[in-house]
View 1 (cartoon, rainbow, N blue to C red):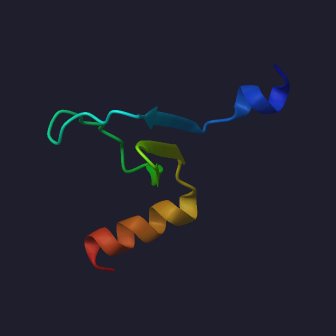
View 2 (cartoon, rainbow, N blue to C red; view 1 turned 135 degrees about the vertical axis):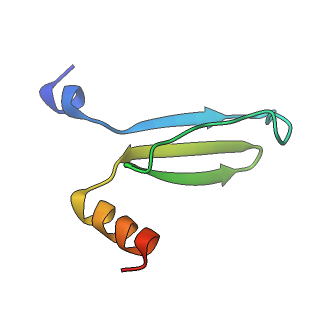
Length: 66
């Protein structure tokens, strides 16, 4: 493992091909993380990474109406 892989804060969760029934799957993600959902056929991929400072500021502005 090289140094770049050790410092990588990204992650992914892949669920499929049989998805849990609605209401049977919960994933709690802090608002300090960015989350992207991609559906590929019967599979769902959730990619996440820490938000940048700029993304956090934009989120707080929308949240507080600034």
